[in-house]
Image (cartoon, rainbow, N blue to C red; front, top):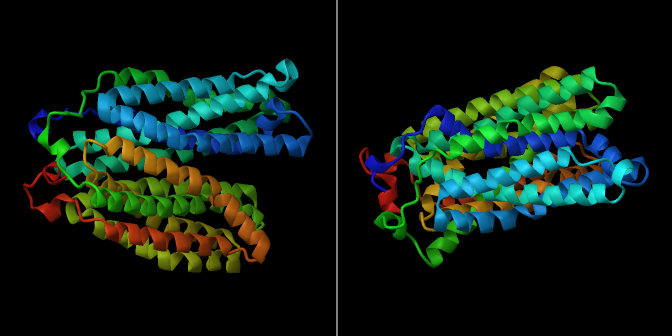
Amino acid sequence: MDAAAKPTLSKGQIAAVAAGNALEFYDFLTYTFFAVQIGEALFPGSGDAKLLLSLATFGVGFVTRPLGGLIIGRFADRRGRKPAMILSFSMMGIAIVGLSLTPSYAMIGMAAPIMAVLFRMLQGFALGGEVGPNTAFLVEAAPPDRRGFYVSLQFATQNFSILVAGAVGLLLSSTLSAEALLSWGWRAAFLVGALIVPFTIAIRRKLSETLVHEDAAATRGPSGRGLVVIAVAGLLLLAGATIGTYTVDYITTFAQKSLGMDSRIAFVSTVLLGVTMTSFNLVSGWISDRYGRKPIALIGWVGLFFAGIPAFLVMVHFRNAAALFSMTILLAMLMGLITPPSVTLFTEALPARIRAGALGTVYAVSIAVFGGSAQFIEQLLINKTGSPIAPAFYMTAAIGIGVIGVLMLQETGRKARGAEAPLLATL
């Protein structure tokens, strides 16, 4: 695509493109905060059985993500990024509102858990289809020297939503009675997130399309073995980044369960995590436009590889707020450096003709397989080994795999091409 023909995006339009990822993380944390109340409201059985069914239903959403990444991603590669983004976000809104308004098990019996499962499946499908089209759109709509920063907005909004979800959860749990939380409080938390859906869809309808089938740049690029290498590299780096992210997110639970710290201190670490990762997402995207994707990404990857185990050792040894907060900030800084340049590197390496579908599918598979299991595996490792630092070893192994993925890809940053060379001309 000719740079002159690229759409000029307003701040509101950029926010509308990135809103899907923000809503994904908001929903993820909101569900985990209120898993007990959701189980009590919508599922049969005793207290423990209700919670297990609630958590299992949450996991169902991971199963349908790869399917959404493939189907909606391929739709975006054939019909355009804009209609795909409108479709996925509309489905996401229906699913979130539907789940929050599902009548209780006491009112409609087994229809309640069935509806909950169906809405979670729909939401997972929609979320799987969000990442590929909107990341492809940002890469294609951004000026060549600002692609890293544009993609970083995706992840910055994700981490900002951690703050919002934490604030909403803390506010509701602090002001409402247990009965109110059970009857309507958890529903209100989901509906707060759903408020942005109609506004986001309205803004997305005004976006210009970035996919141009006739563009020679869209038909040129690697094929066959080269595409396989790119796909494998993308899977490795996204798997490593996913496990790293979910391990760092696990610190809130780790502080309470393994360190025996007060929940209020643990929630402060969540706030610090959100602020730090949001800030360093933006910083890493910005500097990757100037110094290249791989150098900036590798600083984060290698730094986290060597810092992960020592950071957990410090938290376990001191077991105080100072150690928890300082190590949370350190790990969040490194994790914040990793994701935007790594995802930009992978996205730019993909030819435009398959970009949305390939990225969406690989990302969704990584989230479904590695994200859905990360915290379960880490808690299982703690239980089996008796070592509270077991999650650090699991994360470090995953980060090592991610480093291999980054090294497999060629630099795509503008600086590596020369000051005036447009990136798309080389894909």
